[in-house]
Amino acid sequence: MRGAIPASFPAFATERSPRWRVDIGGAKVDLDAAALEAPVVQVAGGSFRLVGMGVTAEVNLGERRAHLAIPPSPHALAVVLRHLLPVAVEDGLVFHAALLAGGDRAWLCCGPSGAGKSTLARLLPAHARCDEMAAARFVGGEWHGEALPFWRSRPGRVPLHAVYLLRHGECHRRRRVDPRLALRQLSEHVLWPTGSPAATDRALGLLCDMVEQVPVFDLEFLPRPDVLEVLAGNTDEAAA
Image (cartoon, helix red, strand yellow):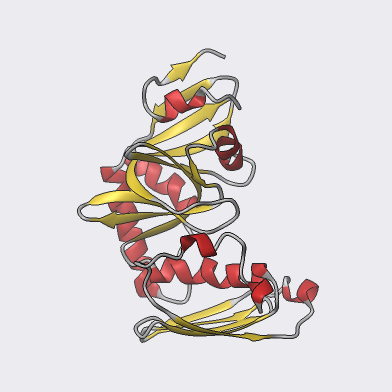
C-alpha cells in the first residue's frame, strides 16, 4: 500500500510526533464511482468512523490506533485526514488556507479556490509553509499557524500574526475587518468537525476567541512579490 501515502506526508514525521498504530489494508473499488459518494462520519466516545468515497476508517483517538481500508491512492488517505483533523485538533481549527511565515510571524491566508492561496505561495516560496490547508492552534497562551501535509507543504508552527481574507485586485491593499464580520466570513473557510456536535461547539468557541485575539484583514493584491510588505504589515497599501 505504499502508493496510498501522499508524497508530502513523510516530511511531517519527527521524533516528537505522537506515536500511532495504523493498519492499512487494501480496498478494491471503482475510484470514479467512489468519488461521487458522500462520506458519512460518526464520532462518539473517543471513536471516529468514516465510510464513503471508497474508504472505511476506524480510529480510536484515545488509544492512537487506526484501521484503514483504502484503495492504493494518496487521495484516499487525504479524505480520511480532511475529516479526522477537525475532530482530532482539539486546541485549534483547520482552515482551507495557505500559511506563510517570516521570522517569528505567520500569516494565515484564507479564501475559496481561485482567491490566490497558491498564487501567494508561488510568489513567496521562501515564506510558504503550505498552500491548501493549515491549522490555527492556541498553544501556550497564544495562537500559532501550523502547516498541514496537503499539496505543497513543509512542516512548521509559527506564532500567528494576522489572518487574511484574499481576493485578486488592481493593487495591494489591506483593510482591517471588524471581529463580528470576520467571524461570519472566516466561518466559510473552516473545515468544521462532522459527526460530533460537541466538537463543532468547541470549534465555534475557538473561532470566536481567535477573531478577538488575532487581527483579520481583507487583502486585495496583485501577483507580485512585493505583496510581502503588505502581508508583514509594513504598509497597508502599495501602488498598482
